Length: 57
Image (cartoon, rainbow, N blue to C red; front, side, top):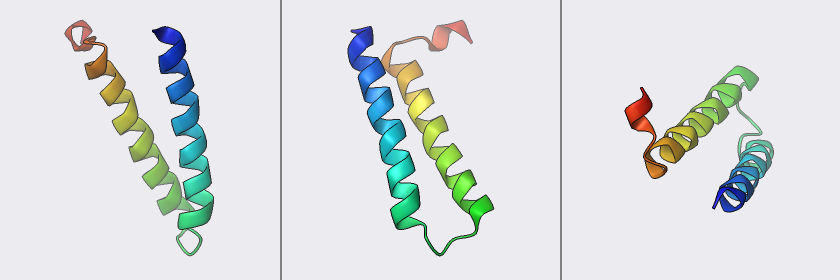
């Protein structure tokens, strides 16, 4: 189970980087960093709820 989650995490990290280079060419670098950060935070919270770990908050 954890191997699958680790692989998905690596895939999403790679996609974030690729999409940032391709899709955000004309955007300010600070804004691009903020967008990437939001994507990572959403994915992280998704994993928290997927693994039912929110009770540890």
